[in-house]
Image 1: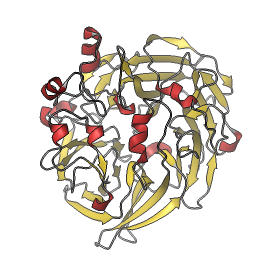
Image 2 (image 1 turned 45 degrees about the vertical axis):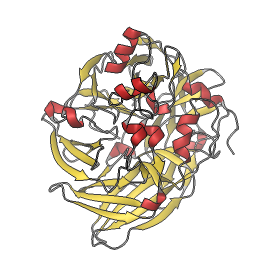
Image 3 (image 1 turned 90 degrees about the horizontal axis):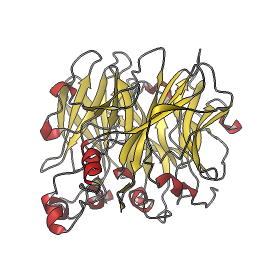
Length: 483
């Protein structure tokens, strides 16, 4: 079992210091010489705005971190995204905005006045597409950063494709490996909740390809792309039918969300060419991340592997960690859905009865079938994901790194080894909180031998607050992958 230590709370402190100039680091162990490039990571780093503690893990202002590997010693930079709310609150030296899980400051009247104004913290994912480094959060437009020094260039409107009226862009874009096109969606809530889909070819302008009505006002964090279809899994995390407290600014979006299993789950299969959508109902569960999706033409099905929860505990945990130790337990699993294009009921099966999160596949070529899913597991239902893991969907084998007391790993970014011939031939890059040493470390694991533990550790100058996602950009070629 996981240790009952609450050292993970160190990962929810604010970090204010920025490094525009690189700090040289010292590696412990052997860094594979073929790892030449930059690991970009992002997450909320300002959880306290001039003494005002935010209420939810997802609300803190985004900070981008860059760890460069290659010639000479490793180098590290970190900078806040200079998004609108961050700049204005720095000038005012107080909190001005509400966010996903934190209402606007002040009394009822001020909250009503500011009910439609929320911060886009730019804190969830950082990708490179078409030569641009982009900080993403589904609460608004991407923010364009300089990949060399992490300075903020400005908001990215995708050449006008993101209109002011629906300027949201998910933190989980997908890339078609055959074309290099980046696909993504944005959500619009209102009388009829909808999703807008975008296709952004390298070297060209982004295009809105479709607008699809949702069956209910679901919070959708992720989606998938197959060779023929866009796949959306709408799970019953929903706002009230008439959200009066939210409409009048007296509560936040996150506080208004409720789990309503009676609604079931709806899986949308949307044709990539025509934009026509078919919705298929399944039994209820919650889901934040899709691990893999692909077409199975022999059976006339779309197959989706995802991380599922049978309760709404995780909705509470993201509030609880901002106040103290986790009180609400939750457990998850990897589940497979088979969606029949002919209209037969969705078939669901459990592939792994173990909590598993932050799933990644090698090269992120999610239009294809993948056998190995990399991610994080945890054993304590009142804990956080912490152990780098690999799951073989064909054999059911789960391999994990050793459990190290007072260490909590972040999302594992897989990088193919030179001459890789299988999905096990990967280096896994994870930023790990070492609470005992009061610092974070970049740890490198061999995907083919996780039980041996980290082969290299690169201590950082401080604790990197717990983030969400990141990507590796090889120095010899432009990045075309995103998760």
